[in-house]
Length: 341
Length: 118
Image 1 (cartoon, rainbow over the protein chains, first blue to last red):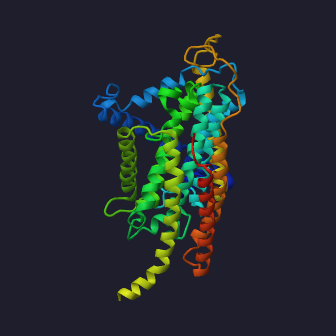
Image 2: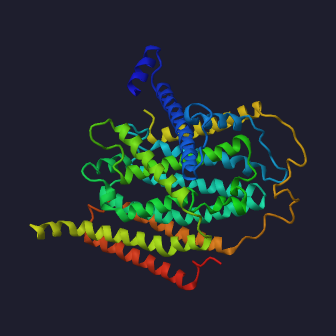
Image 3: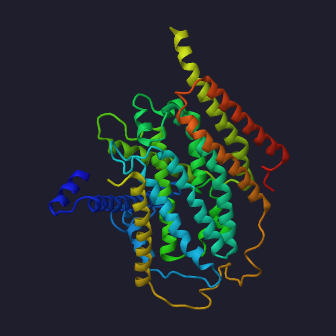
């Protein structure tokens, strides 16, 4: 597609830097559409799944099976007034949703969507992903602090404590995969799973990754930051209209991108027989998303101290053990093979 | 060609532009009716009492400190993990020592009760 665009522009005598720039901007718009459409779809799926678990119908009026509900919601949110309460820290309050959305958006630049379908072939892709996913924490702290609201502050602080804690097992669970693949480039990691998905070699890491990513996404059973019964809406209590929409968009965009990362590093990414790579990719990613939803709507919330205990006293030692175990296994593997022969 | 980080930079600028355009659009479409009650801080319909920006529980900062230690450690682990297959047993043993020191730190914090949430 890049080639086609460049040739078309060459006909209009646009070459060099500007042609490249236009190509990148076209990709940016496509990516934005991809994210927004998928987020709307995921929100709709979530509401339907939730309704299914609670034996309700869920949104079913707008469009077939209510599939256009999220579109209508988006239109509603954009036409709502943005309220600035008089005590807020104006700049911090204004910037928080923007930073939250941008950090969610930039994660998609390094993720492979199919064979050769990756925007930026970054050789430190995984590190980039991890680094940018943790900027979300800053925006949440900004939102919690800037709102000058007790619920927001409590929610924000809790979110930060939870997210930075669970980021460690999330990172450590990836190391087994990095050691096996020998690369941080996400495409290389996918290609290393040609014969065997890493979930077979790293089942423990997969489970740790799923638990930690649920906490990272602030979803039940780890949804303490947004525990409605005690904190109203957590860090975005004061936000309304489009600013709230950015938080909402970022939340589901993060869900989607973490599902993509999970598929990429554990489930063989876009690899699969017979069908084109993007079909496998879609099937796997939505499978992981449904797993997250299944967990969210079946398990009750756990207490703050138990959540922290689970992380620091269980997941982190376990994931460190997993790294050491993987290292020993890789080093011992040639000898075991010789012994078997 | 624009290099990889250049593309990411353009995406960053594009993201900023998109959010600002959305906010302006929303500002154009939405009503603007200010009122004292609407602009007051939300606290379940009551007047807020006291200041919000107070000194916060020390526990959060302890976790933050522990997090920094562990995060820095993961940065050291990244290059080691990538080059793991090319490295010999020596590097592996070195990293084992590193992990053991870290576990000792974790054990110390555990013992001192820094991981307890009260």
